[in-house]
Image (cartoon, rainbow, N blue to C red; front, side, top):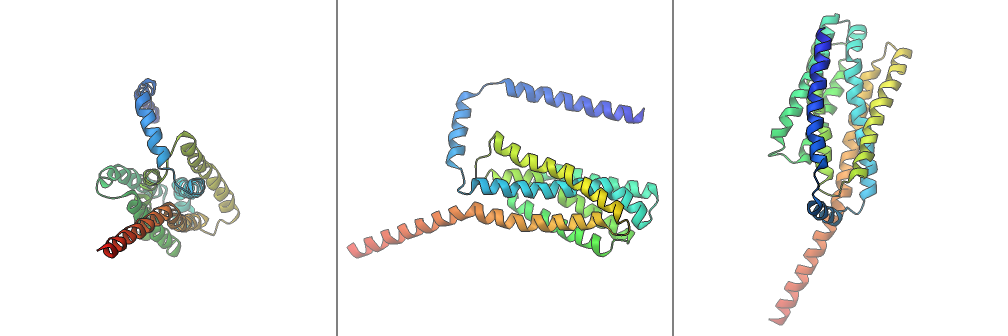
Length: 255
């Protein structure tokens, strides 16, 4: 009955939110749509498709690692580390608890931190915590600390990634659906593959290796995306500087 009331409360909350969203969807703002469409068309990046493909891979590895660790941390703690079931359940709660808390705090962090800065800090935190998880895979103390840090580091990556890409290029329905499909594929494929591999190699911490590999992949992909997104801006700044220099030279020659 406790589980039943938990599902009832969650379903009621989702129903109320969906009703409000449906009401917003039914409202027609033709003028605002035209203005936003023209503004987004002017903000279309030069490497728009390449950025979307890289963001597809970025969310694929990120969501896959998040769901994999949250799904297998209980069984990993009981079989590999030797924890009791109650302690392993607390470890799983620590991961999702820090994840939920930091995702809520991200609303306040976004007021004074840029999305790119939040992504960098998230990548650093997930990379360091997953590295310590692999290095001290049988230490319960390290497992508790690194799991909490890993959950907090994974919290702000997805919303910050969407906010970051919207600064450099237009994101419509098709573009958003494309990298959301990448996140969904990571959600389905990576946990399934890791479950099979962990069954074949029970003595190896395959789950931790996956988290470390995904953290390395996201840490490599984001600088590449940032370079491609800001490359046209750097060229425009250089061209503006050249034009200003030419103007100053022409005025000085006239004088």
